[in-house]
Image (tube, rainbow, N blue to C red; front, side, top):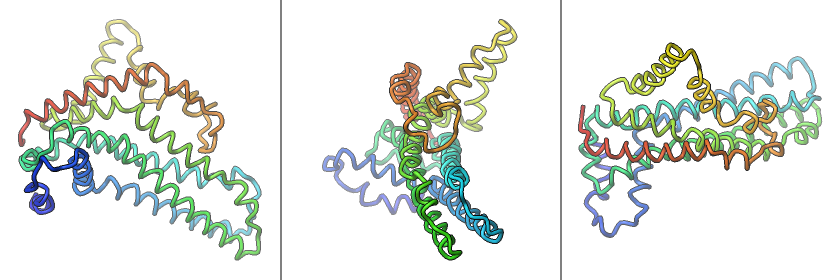
Length: 300
């Protein structure tokens, strides 16, 4: 808290009336990077692990002297890198939302943050933007950097072994992979899961301890009671639909998990899906309630 106090000293002493409307939001974003370093450290660590695994894999393939002749084989490590980074960013998003508002109450830093000219709604909206915008952008940027390094290493190894790089470069639709990942992270992991993130933030602000239990147990109880009373699983099927990452036929046509199926995506069916907009409305309600709860909460 002393570090945060020093960092925000000039901001706190400045005239609030002269601040640009976006300054509190931008400072709040910077605060999240200072307090929750896992936002960028975890994806960066995964990117380094992917590169290390790729180098080991290339060394094995080179030792076996097997030239790459199939496009699917060439694309496989690049698809894996993109999917791995997407997965870790989604995991970070879940745990971040569970800790985002409870941590400041446990370490009593909430007293300092509330003394700044930043509203509760701005704070909550900032934290909501981390899984919706910031982490998807981090995932896409790291994927691009990782893919470029992998491509350069791959090309260098092929040239060193007297092989042509034409097959490698022609078989990698990296631009489509990056656009596919951006779509997946911003639309599916972002907008589609918006009510999930909103609910987790609400539980983080409300629960004193074990926010994950308060977030999960109500849904488990509902599912169990429905099964016991009506012998049906409608709620469970709805939960699977919501957590499936948007309608499967739209997210990955034909169930194919490749990151270059850009032309086969049905944008209109996803963006105008009633469930998507119902989820965004639910997320807005959760954010409003979270801001109200944070206003009345103090240190634990």
